[in-house]
Image 1: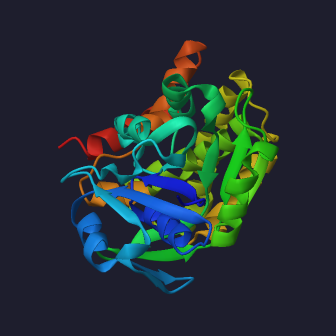
Image 2: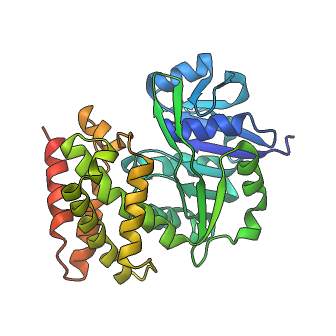
Image 3: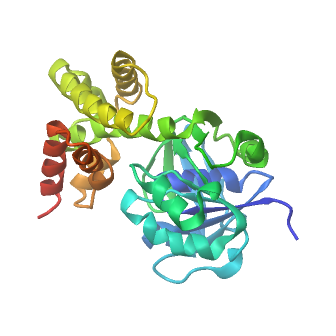
Length: 315
């Protein structure tokens, strides 16, 4: 019986495929990927091609694969030590059933999908002691079925909430991620970790998707001012939720740095709008609006952006 860490990646899109590929060629990991459509079908036959920051080919015999549209591979049933959910935000809950099937009582769950609410819904499903706050800043996009471009080196950020595992309980996971080159980074405050990424997403994604602009274009004075105001509306709600955030000036500085570092990037929401796909707006700006209403607070910019993006994809 293998003593390797068994890791399942549910939602083998851009980021999920990148993480799965890097772990598949890591000595200490045995990997299960769950994907859909032509992308998954090509991976089953031809393996995974990673281009960009690193050029690697991962043979199809280096990982186990399950295709959503066909049938679920039962080879990992009850065996996964760690499950990463990397799907679009609206698919997260739909993958919980498969996650339960792959789990044993000690399985740890990390949801890397964008947006708010995933930590809470996963904790309700699996218990907060098994759910680990996590985000990723790696950049990846797909340039064909079975092929992913690793466009930006980032990190897999992992944190802790009140009941989630402490750093010392995750040594094997950190070692495996380190060996894979995915740069695991520990953040003490798991709630701050999740909200920090959400604030960037609400400030960038809807404005980029409505205007059809790459991230760097949002540095233009008037657009950047609007992005900042959207972010600070969200930050006010985060603080009311008890999240410890940097002061507003530091948040705005961080936003500027991210836009500079990702200046050529077409955000995922822009790609979804252009492809006529459902966006993640319900888990980003719309979630801010809904949380604000609970406190009797108006968030007009987030409300407007939510409505505009929803209308863009409602035809």
